[in-house]
Length: 353
Ligand SMILES: Cc1ncc(COP(=O)(O)O)c(C=O)c1O
Image (cartoon, rainbow, N blue to C red; front, top):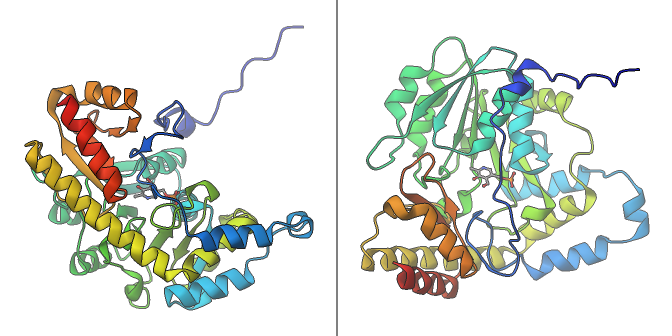
């Protein structure tokens, strides 16, 4: 008997640009490549995980009632407006799977977070992209408003954006919400803690608004995969129809709650990152390396044609940064960690410059 042929995936799956994360060992060095928290989460989170770690908890499917109540209080929304998600990535997937069908039009920005495109392509959507403005990578609001049309089903935006670090103010977002009143508008606030602009207060006025937050960045819980998606209760009920009922594990839910209880940790970490980002920018100024002013915990710098080589040489010295030159020629993205880490980074960069 002949061996069976390899199965052919759906057509949309054949067209997904695969997400290829940088490979190789990441622990041990100076990790400035994923915009993670670079010093580790609050000790209260570790305590809560140790307390939750017993055989009985592990044997039960997770229940989210209490976590939902507590997180809703923290984010100042009614519990019915909040959905726990397996990181922002699941929030994006759930929004796309709820509102976007095969060949539906979705509007994205370029460059932006790669997973928007990934999930839209997987759903078979027709993706239209609007480019950030050169030379300063400012938010292209007019171009975006021109692109949104009656057949647009979803608009997915990171505010502030990755990798540009640039952001949009609330009045611009309101214009967008009005222009796309018939479409799902997701505002991904993964870097909110570093910038302070949030659309959460707009939820009651815009039934097409979806807002995501993550515990992967400022809170330092990237490994646990937990985030929140907010929208009107009627929308949350629709999103729940496509979400796996147990996609957030019990320890991740407990850790997210514990993380929100340590406000001092969060305040101090964010303040440290903002000082470190200034230090990083001053170091780049001193080396005459151009960069884009950022509202997040990273800075995109333009090191010119040597970008990849510089990335590799930094890696040899145990410093990881992210190459973005494939979409923004000459650009590397550097996460702002602590001030000590930035001094170390600048010293290494100077030695190679
Ligand atoms: C804009 C943006 N959204 C979401 C994420 C990922 O978030 P999560 O870890 O919650 O899936 C990232 C990570 O780099 C990001 O840059």
